[in-house]
Length: 153
Picture 1 (cartoon, one colour):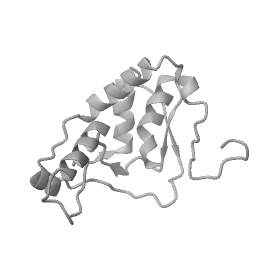
Picture 2 (tube, rainbow, N blue to C red):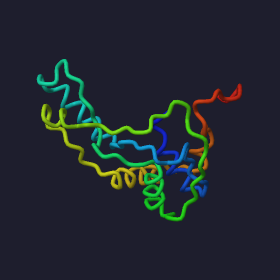
Picture 3 (tube, helix red, strand yellow):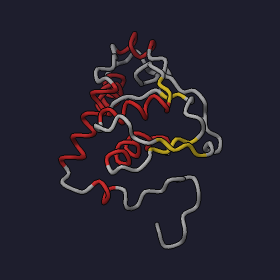
Picture 4 (tube, rainbow, N blue to C red):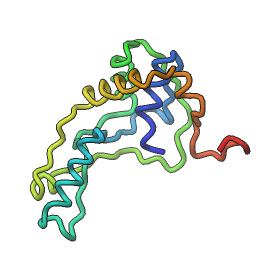
């Protein structure tokens, strides 16, 4: 469920719906683009040095969910997009940020795709699907931790 915030924010912003922030938006996350994560896994898998080690992959940069919403709104071309605040998610962690020092030293991993570039790539990918953004949001579960009504799964 924590992997949904960026697509949900972007699609909601593109269709003019408010981006929903659970809690006050000061909670932070470390976002990395999928190709950076995949490259990090490959680098670790091809090296003997990290065997038996715990490695963290990410950007190494903390970003608040509130700031993420602002970044997404700008990429979507709607800098004044609405944000709606809702009660915090149960058990939500206030801070998540990867320390990538070890994976960098052992495997040479460094993230290459900035948050803004990753958001642009996702935006362009959605445009290239040829589907309406409303269609992509049809089965959205806003509170995905709650049990859906029967018949929706």
